[in-house]
Amino acid sequence: MDIWDKKKRSEVMSKIRSKNTKPEILLRKALFAKGFRYRINYKNLPGKPDIVLPKYKTVIFVHGCFWHGHDIGCIDSHIPKTNTQYWTEKIIRNKERDKNNMIQILSMGWNVLTIWDCEIQQKGNIDLLIQKIANLLH
Image (cartoon, rainbow, N blue to C red; front, side, top):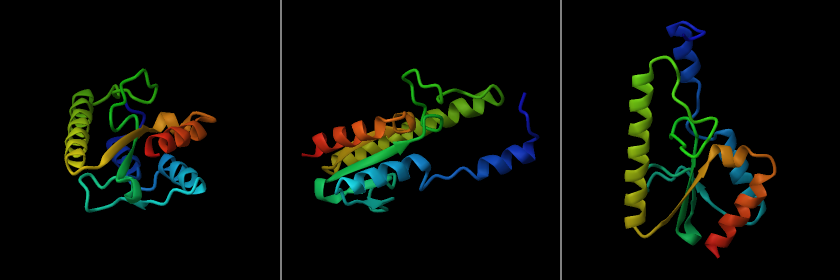
């Protein structure tokens, strides 16, 4: 059972941002500090990637574990106990859309990296992620 009524739940869900989320901002700041220059939410590529590194012809999607169905034992990736069928179908659609966007971007000759919210939020992990990204780009 949900702790809020339908109207309140709708209000709360409508405030969840799809751009400039905390994990995106943390990753962008760390990339910029290491000298990487990028564009954000580039409209000319499928899915409007969160971060685009044109010099390296690479895009980075920062996926929220809940919204994009992170599978690998992630605590934030779960189906709510209420309205289960809706959420299951929604997350499946999101994953399918992500897959199609990635295929289209790869077919255009770009590289695609997917970074999960939980990877960014782990304490001290941002430096490791930036190093991993730098190694892949160079």
